[in-house]
Picture 1 (cartoon, rainbow, N blue to C red):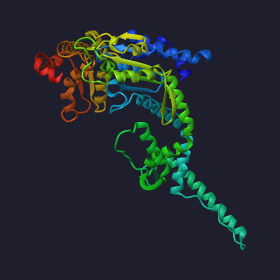
Picture 2: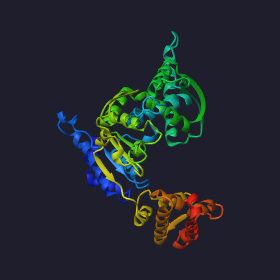
Picture 3: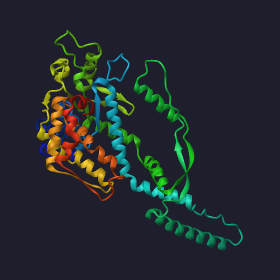
Picture 4: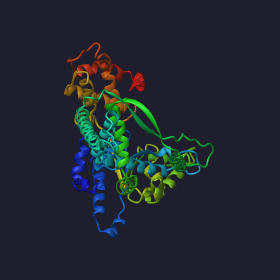
Length: 464
């Protein structure tokens, strides 16, 4: 990861984010600096590495302006473990519900999966060879060397060696056929390892997630693994056996250690809806009926400022995990968070509401633009879909207008508008509109499909 970040300067990180997210340059700059600071910390003097803490970020902005997408893309660029959680799902310790430590356990689980996948790729060649040998053993069992008797020893040895040579030549011919895919449809019987551990549920309180997982894993390790015969094609057998062989070649202790390090040094936790646990102190004298909201903030505090959390893979320290919190803050204000928690998010970024021009660019420029997604889906039906430039501008205008009149849900409005526009085409292809057809979306078509709906405000409240 350190080598990956070495080649990513803050400007390059922003350029990568620009490919998927329109606008919000201030937010992109801050997350790019936070990501580069990780490489700077890991390459600083060893005695200072423990002292340099990440600058956690608080993003403030309405829904649909790109808060989650910025954090998600950032983690992808850095190849870092990433977890998105909603603060409103957590409850104070003592209440029924998820406790805040579970987000750290989820992060470690994600890191373990990432490291395990990378290790599987490293041993893939060896695992494929072992799988080929296992399939060949089923198709053409190797010749066992015969035990020579006292009479005619020379003849028996000669016969045994010629049989072994013939067997080896046959195996090599079949190995080539397996590699070329000629035998993919042939069925064979394989043994599949199955865990005999039952799913266990414990009634009553006092049992947290970690204890439950540990009990299930302990019982699973005690129960013997049992094999089950399955008749599958060679193509399916290759996939099933490859997983088993790769798992045998991977040292899980090494995976756990590396995953803990990766989560500690590179992990990103995105806490959405942080404003939902902020008690609005102004007006009506309190924060409403949810008495555990401030308690959730107090539970979040030690995790964000740095503590040790016990997971089933070992102890993890949260001191250098990057926390990105986000919220719309329509009702509550950032200052309604408890002061200690505010202090742990020193970087404040306000994301701007999207303009009509932003909507137009969102439809046209990003690599994963909705228009490009629809084009790719219809390409699968051999239908060419194109959007005229004035049609995109009209879609942007309608989405912006609906947002301002009904409810501002940001760029997500484009999804509902485009879905309503394209529904008839998606239904008629391929029955009415066949393969090799061309569909051109014009400004007139957009107006025909959407204008009546937008004007009928009562109906648009439900549909758009």
